[in-house]
Every structure is written in structure tokens, then in C-alpha cells.
Length: 167
Image: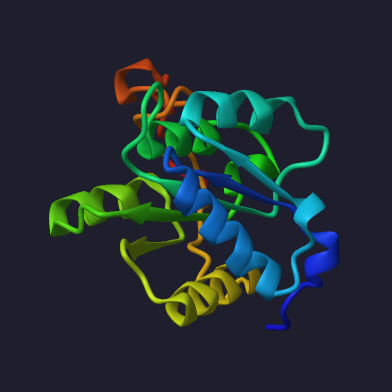
């Protein structure tokens, strides 16, 4: 897949550490993303309000896991519960907690990739390019049953009568 043009893409950074937001912004600018196309928030709640109010969705979210007010996993769940293309916004989770169970949970909730902090700039650039190009994007066909758009329980689905075929 070809890499989309950075000048036309918008990226959301969500991290409670100012130094991490600044570093991620700098790395993105080194990849060609203009400063004006990069939005940053210090917590998931502010990021969520921005995310849901935009007329044009972000092309990528890079989000810390552990933050005040709304953590990265809660923010991800809000995004994945949306309708339409916004639910499929590419999402990279940043985390200092690299316990296998936590990573599996984040993958099950719909992250496209993750980066363990601290990370090397080259690793960051590779992950961003893979996710935004679609190379590492996970396929999502339907909302998870735990999401607000949950499927009907089996007992709520009316039975379909079975008839014998006519001969």
C-alpha cells in the first residue's frame, strides 16, 4: 500500500505528559505532518469531545493508556462504539504497561497497534507508517457485543419457521 500524503492528514495525540506530546508531535513533523494537522490533548475526555465534534475525522489517533479523566482504553471504546467510518479510525496505543493481558485486552477492544514506552524514534515512525497506510490496520466488521451498539440477545430474535420443501 502507498503512504497517504501527510499534508492532507490529521492526527490526534492524547497523552497526559506534556513532554511525550511534544516528542510525538516532533516525530510526526519529521515524517512530514504539518504542525497545523496535529492536535494534542492531555486526557481522553478532552480528546473525546474534540473527536466527536469534528466534521472531518482524524486519520490517526496516537493515545496513551494511563491518563486522568478518561484513559486510553475508555477513549478507544467510545470511538469503536460510534457509527460509520469514525469507528474505524486507526488507533495506536502508547503504554508503559506491557503486560501480555493488557495488550491482549487492547487488541480485543480494537487497537491497530501499540508501542511500549519508552520507544525508539525509528520504531515509532515504522508503526505510524504501517498503521496509517493500512498495512497494520485491523479489520473490524461489526461492533463488539459489549459496545453500546450490542447485538440482540438470542432470546430476543424471533424463531424462523422451518417448512418442508414442496415436491
